[in-house]
Length: 198
Image (cartoon, rainbow, N blue to C red; front, top):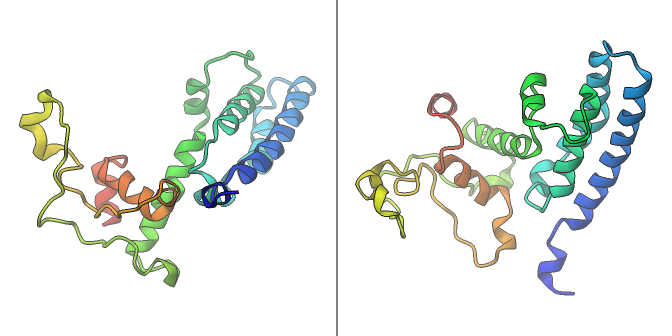
C-alpha cells in the first residue's frame, strides 16, 4: 500500500455515510407516522442525529470525496419536508435555513481563520499563513482569459490576502493550511464579513 493511500479519508467518509444512511432511514419512517404539521419535530431529529454527525471533525475529512454524503443530506431534507423523492433541494435548504455539506465545511474552515486572527488556535498552527495583507510582490496570475486582461488588478489571485502555501503532493493540499488561503483569496466571503474578521 502506498503512502498516498494511507493518507486519504475514504474509510472515515464511508463510516460517516453509513451512520447518516441509518438516520435517513429513521427520518423516512417518521415522516409517514408523524402528522403533517410536525415539521419542527423532524427538524429537531435532523439536527440531533444527522447534523451533529455531519459536523463532527468535518475540517479533517471534508476534503475527501463526499458525493454520497451530499446525496444523503438531500434525501434527509426531502424526508423532513415530506417532499417527493426527486424534488429540487436548493429551495428546501434556503427555506429551512440549513447549510449544505460543502458550506458547512467552508464555515468550519473560516471559523479556524477567525480563531487564527484572535490567537485562539493551538500551537500547531503557529506557522499558519500570515494574517498580514500581502501588498508587496503580488502573485501574478497565469492564463488569464482575454476578457479579464484589463481587470487583472481586480482578480483575487493577483493580489492575495493570504500567501498561498506550496506543496509537492496533492494529498498535502487537502488540509486547512492550504484550503483556508484558497477560500479567502478566491472571495468566498463577502467583503464586509472579511472586514469584520480583520
